[in-house]
Image 1 (cartoon, rainbow, N blue to C red):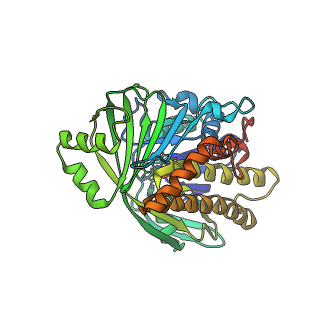
Image 2 (image 1 turned 30 degrees about the horizontal axis):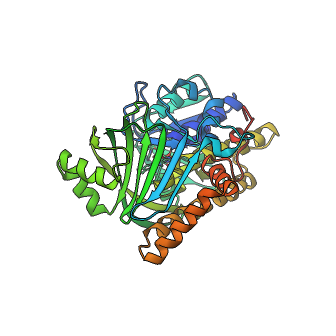
Image 3 (image 1 turned 90 degrees about the horizontal axis):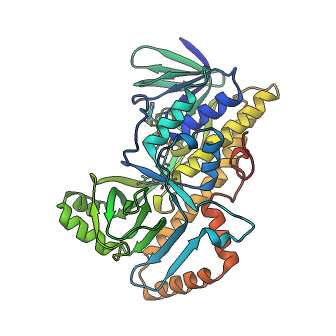
Length: 409
Ligand SMILES: Cc1cc2nc3c(=O)[nH]c(=O)nc-3n(C[C@H](O)[C@H](O)[C@H](O)COP(=O)(O)OP(=O)(O)OC[C@H]3O[C@@H](n4cnc5c(N)ncnc54)[C@H](O)[C@@H]3O)c2cc1C
């Protein structure tokens, strides 16, 4: 039986960030990370899945020494969002922030697997983290006294605090019967890397089509973008099955040829998109973070950013507790974490819903209202600055490590 203070299930971006922050700030705290897959392997970005990270996440990764390890992290200095078949359009640039709030970029595109590999590489420096890969969880029980987790190979773990960082289909959430609200967005997100005949000019683009949004995220090569095309599940299946030539035509048309002719370079994959929200994030001595607690539509590229902030918030509270002689599983502290991060997640879920529903309305009046609203917003510097602050992750109740000008916890 292995006894540990903190047991984290899931070595995704959130679980690894949490382990790293805790290990760095509490060198005597025994931490164990359990992951069902193999250990992340360092290597060049494969670009199977990428994420747009905001400034708040960039600051966290920078303070952990992880940012420096990423080989490919193309920045974008502009964003363009528009609606097909209408004059609704809004553009953002780093210069919109004004001279007092300079930022090197509006966001960065990172490869999910490379990010995991860099987080892991950094975390290996801390001897207080134990690792168990290819772990098959069999049973989890949590009580007021302790948590017990058993694996299929017969090993067992007792922990003071169990953290479910095990993604959208969290087994911790399921086995501990933490209630979940969800609805289908009726979209699948089709992702692929695409070559463009026109250069992307370090601009992230998103067009809202009547069927759903298409995002074109700039990669290091000025003629390569990563797409997230949200369409009905049946359409996603058709788009994946069709020959490359036909797909390229459909994609070029959907993008309104904004980057000229598009040519798919990789396998096309699609992910069902669901809103998930656990109504309880902590039970006894177990707690959920990131996708295990909430998933949102990828249309604003905020899911990973939100999850990283959960990890930072939980780490901050645990570190504070330990440094003041309290325990890592104090109920008051876990409830504080839950209240803090639920408020942020709820806001983001509501915003994504408003965006999705708002843009799906095809009534001519709705289109006119959108067009006028976007045109007005595009002209109003203070409103644009507000929107930009939100996109950069500079708004809301940020964990200390993610705030501007703060280097570590
Ligand atoms: C199409 C698409 C595009 C997206 N684009 C963006 C974007 O541009 N920007 C952004 O911020 N977000 C984006 N997101 C969201 C982002 O990908 C997720 O929010 C983020 O990856 C979640 O991280 P996580 O660590 O919580 O979960 P995961 O990355 O899912 O990691 C969970 C880990 O737990 C492990 N695990 C699962 N079950 C078990 C178990 N039983 N035992 C042990 N280990 C287990 C898994 O193997 C995995 O390693 C996108 C999502 C989609 C679907």
